[in-house]
Length: 71
Image (tube, rainbow, N blue to C red; front, side):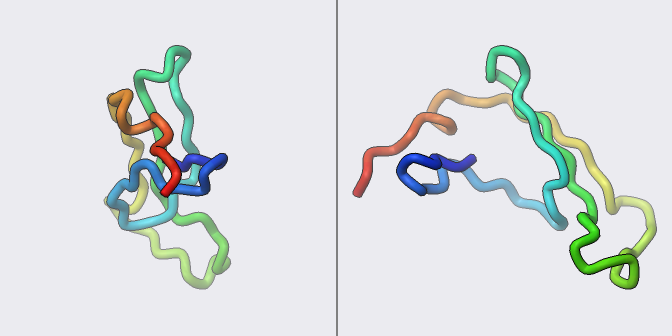
């Protein structure tokens, strides 16, 4: 998660690939995101196979999305 006003990272997730889509649910308590190849290097670098694409749903704690004070 990113605080655009203070230009600070609020939360980072471990991933093996690029986040290709992301969204919060209606009340902000769940965050869903997909991890997959994003094609920025073109088809030559795409590697097919099991385990390359994932969808994750994460419960969001208020402290993870609350802006931190500026340093």
